[in-house]
Amino acid sequence: MDPCYNFMQRSERWMQERAEKLRGQIRTLFGTCHDMSARMNLVDSVQHLGIDHLFQEEIEDALTSIHGSEFRSSSLYEVALRFRLLREHGFWVSPDAFNKFKGDDGKFRNDIANDPKGLLSLYNAAHLLIHGEPELEEAISFARKHLELMSQDSVLNPPLAEQVKRALSLPLPRTFKRVETICYMSEYEREAGNIPILLELAKLDFNLLQHIHLEELKAISEWWKDLYGYMELRYIRDRTIEAYAWSYMMFYEEDFAFTRMFVAKIIALDTVMDDTYDAHATIEECRQLNTAIQRWDKSAISILPEYLKKFYIKLLINFEEFEHQVSDNEKYKAVYLLPTRSWSYQKHKPSFKDQVVLSTKSSAVQLVCVAAMIGWGNRGKNKGDVASSVECYMNENRVTSEVAFAKIDSLVEDEWRTTNQTRLEHGTLLPMVQRVVNFTVSMVLFYDDRNDAYTFAALLREIIESLFVRPAPI
Image 1 (cartoon, one colour):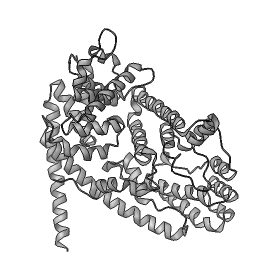
Image 2 (cartoon, rainbow, N blue to C red; image 1 turned 45 degrees about the horizontal axis):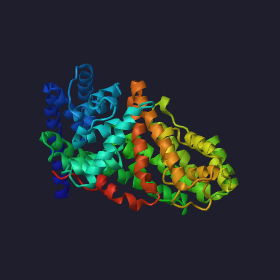
Image 3 (cartoon, helix red, strand yellow; image 1 turned 30 degrees about the vertical axis):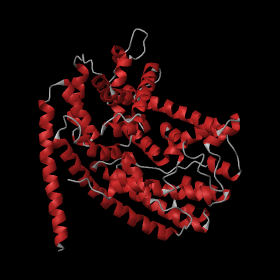
Image 4 (cartoon, helix red, strand yellow; image 1 turned 135 degrees about the vertical axis):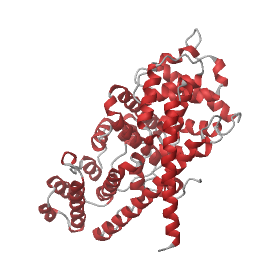
């Protein structure tokens, strides 16, 4: 046997044993940490370093205690930290918590404008606002204004300077956790009061998970190679890595291995259908494929054009395999909506309202579909593409693209409030809500700055390598 293989095996075994020992030490730390401020910082650091999936019970117990305990801190950083941690986990906290930092006129006092750490904490916390909270909108504007001034004047020291820069681009509750973890692991040891065993476990856990993810990437690449070769559809995009990365963004934990692979394959199969409908098939062929999928039976193969028969066969086989792997109450059915494809072929430009409604039905997640609109307007369209939501709004209201984007941005903000509200109103659904948030954040990652990183994969290369190729230095 290759001695290098033996070394890697021993190394991985050592990492697993060391990680388990550190987990025990950190559990003890949770149990002995009774100071409110220290406990909040412990929870925040564990989450920020990406090891919260290892301490779910400890975090829940800590936050329940924090929520039920009297809190009199006059620190803007601590008040905002408590607000953010509790709201993230479905505990109600009133915006009145920030009244102590306001003057008689109801506005934030200028003396807190010189507290960059407190302002950053306020800025991130306020982005967990729900509908009807103008005071938190004011908090965002106030904090952003002063943080931008500090950034422009270069008065912030690292690592706070880097954290402010990232937050101004995308506030912490809306960031992709694993990318933020990579950034924060390099910053944490420079923070005052850091706990070395947290960082050590974070690096070990990241590398152990990375090994699992890399093996899954190899497996799904082989699956796609077989699928692509059998289908012989040369017009479709090869986006296997991106499909897996998208799934990973929702489910990175070890326990979600099946779900992660399942969703990645669904995204890859959907890409085949998307490219077929958008860029290749005629309207009649679209209808034939749609009819076959609705019938969902081998007898429907005969109604398909010759070049789609192999794809349909593989679609049935893959879903049959999926159904064998899940319980009876989790069976999945394939349903694909045709209206946008008909509009595309007929060069129909739907109303903005119709486009949003259809996108919502197609995605099944309102926040995701609205966020996904961003990025499609300026990248150019395939020959047969349906009018984008930006174009629909421009045509209907006779406005510029800037105005249309502003409108869609406002819809995105509105849906973020709805998602935040769901955390508070449906506590039992919180784990699922977090997956929706992860999915939404992934859309921002793929389509930020009006780009389409799913189609133009080079835009994601650095992130992909950081997540799956480069281990955290130990």
